[in-house]
Image (cartoon, rainbow, N blue to C red; front, side):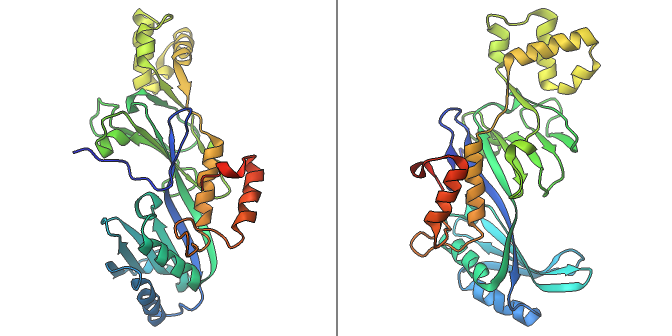
Length: 322
């Protein structure tokens, strides 16, 4: 069975074919009137009016939300809301959080209605983090990821296969966390597709969190005009599969192999204009959706806000795809 990648307000880079989207958002709210369990029941009643199917449960563990709700969308996708954070000073009933994937729930009226309700109930709103997703039409096995100062892990379902390899940099659910994996396998696509996901805060830039990642044209390496041969080809292909092998080569061979890889690989670079547009999409969730354009999430003085962003990005207004 062939599946399509779910998108909501995605932006395609016409030059590279990369598709940029907002894949996850974590919001924090400070509620006006949630002071005890009874008040939380009132919050739930208000939110439930916007959604026909909702699961609710209670957790009592430290550093967990006591009251948790899972709202179901018409296509069976869900998003999560927690109220009443259990910290060192007891349960803070005004502390509320919402975790959602715009690519999966952003198009539904029920999600927009619930999010608007949360904003109406809140005296403070903060976007904690968001995930920038970049879908790259290149086979997963053609990518070479290098370690940096962050925690680096690689997981393979089949030990010898890089096609189903998933690489991680940094700490999960924290700013600077990066994930690189095979989207073609996950979605059953006909064509190659690798996804890069970066977890960012509003103070981050995507470039500052992007690790050193190369992708290689292995056909060019094997049949190109200056293609390596013999041992040089074998070492280059082996280091494509296992970049750590470079550390075991003698100095001369290591420099030679690095030179071959540099000649036939491309450094992964992101389009900063499109990254900033996705960042703007995330920031829009701190404001209520308008009644006539529910899924745009704009300010009353939207034109002034967009003009400000346009000046920052040096973009004409008609190119602002928000």
